[in-house]
Length: 403
Image (cartoon, rainbow, N blue to C red; front, side):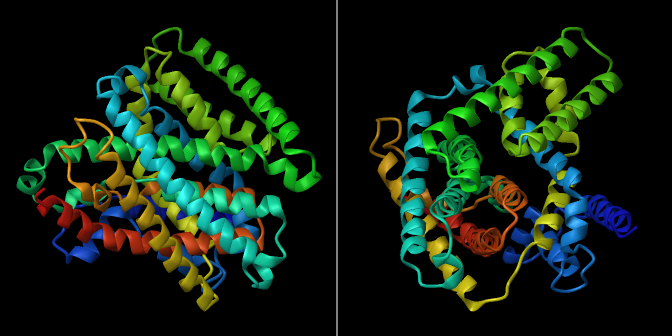
C-alpha cells in the first residue's frame, strides 16, 4: 500500500510541479538558477527520503524499480534521438574535434584525480573497496563531469547572447557532443560490472558484455523497425513509443544492464534509420519535463548528507571538473582557424552539468545498490549544485569578455 501511495504522491508532485517550474517568474539570479533547472525537486526528494519523512524508504524505492528503469529509458531514448548524423554534419568538423578533445581532457583529469584519491585514501569505506568498484565509481564521476548543459542561457538578455552568437553556437554544440562522450564512458561501468561479481578477466567481461548487449539492441531495433514500416496515427505511434521504452528498459533489467544506455543506443539507431523520427521525438519530448522531475525526486530520496567529508570531497570534485573544463576550453581555441576566433576562457561557459549527469548518477545508484554508490552520488549532487551556482556568473563573465 505504501508503494502505491508513494507512486501517486511523486506523480502528483511531478505533474503539478511541471505547471509551475520552468516559468518566467521574477526571482534573484541564484534562485532562478534553481528554479529553471528544477533543482528544488532534489531537496523535495531528500525530504521524502529516509533521512526525514521516510515515505520513499529503501524498500519503497526498490518496489518502484520498474518506474525508475522506465524513466531512465525514456531519457535515454530522448537523448539518443538528438544525434541525427546528417544534422551533425552541418557543423564544421573542427567543432566535433574540439568537443571530443575538451571532453577527453576533462575526463582524464577528473578520472585520474578521483582514482588517485580512492587508491590512497585511508577512510574505511574507500579503503575497503575492491579495485573494480573503484574503477566504476571513478568512471561514473568522470562521465558525469564530462556532461555540459546550457540552461543558464535562458537567464541572459537576448542582446547579450546575440553579441556572442558564434561562441554560443559553439558552446551549444559542445554541450551536445559532451553528452555523447559521457554516455560512451559510462557504458564501460556496466560492461565491466560482472567483473565485480565473479572476478573474470576484464577482456572476457568486456567481450561478453559487448556481445550480449549488441545482440539485444540489434534484436530490439529489428522489432521496432517492423512496427515503424507503416505510417501510423498519432495515438498508435504513441503506444508504439511507450512500448519501446517499456520493453527496452525491461530488457536492460533482465540483462542487468543500464536502461539509460541501452535506450540511448536504440534511440541513436532509430533516429538515423526511420522516417518517423520527427514524430517520435515530439512524443518523447512532450513529457520530458515531468519525467525529469520524477527522476529528481527519486534521486533526491537516495541522497545522504551524513558526513563533513562529503562536503570536502564534493568541493574537490567541483574544482577538479572546473579545472578540466577551463583547460579544455583554453586548449581547443588553438585547434583550428575557426576556433581561434573564440575567447580563451571558453571553459567558463561549460561549467553547468545539466540533466544528463543526474540521469547517469541515478542509473549508477540504481545499478550499484551499496554504501559506496550512496557516497558517490551524494558527492556528485553537491558538486552539481555548486556548478549550477558558479555557471551563471562564469557564463556572464564569458559573454562580457573581449578577446
